[in-house]
Length: 262
Image (cartoon, rainbow, N blue to C red):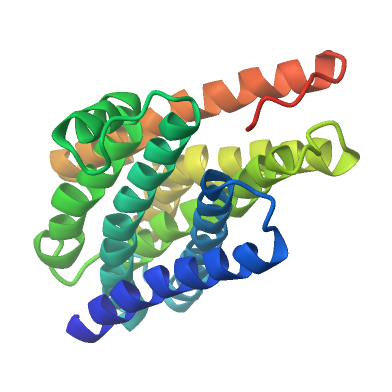
């Protein structure tokens, strides 16, 4: 636990600092805000790939989806905890520098600026806090020694994140009208739908296969808190998928538009 927590607490800030320093040299004409935003997206993509790989290792190692164990299912949770804590602060930094660029920023780290950040990013902040305060205790303590397979499945939900980050980076580089951006948009939709929406029916199906029952029976055979947790997890994913789909419709049906990413 402590080794994994310390590893994540050192790794993600170090990667962010390295990215920021590299961009200082590679893109000196960029604003501080642009360098911070891009560095944050790069680190987010690295963490997403780590989580996805960890999840796949756990999934393919657990033949019995209920009882089989794999050490990564437990240990990577602490990497997630350190990343979510780090990411909350990076989200605040991005918000503050964007506000500063618009001439709307309050004093950095002031109560007013933090309040503005919480109001602007309330959904993402709620998502992070929910993972830290609810899912972490459930994954570490309340599930006992059961369900490593399903923890691995949740990790793979991060597969769409590198494509989401790439899309934003391309916009930041004023390449939003490129073919790469359009192809990446398709990959975002596909990976998000597969790993953040269909993931939940898949977990119910896997449980049904293990116990020899119909998938439709599963919600009535598992503890209520499992259904509630899944509902709370999938709800924001459905909302985000709706936003992504709406953006994709505009992207593929309209003429090239001026860059508004900066």
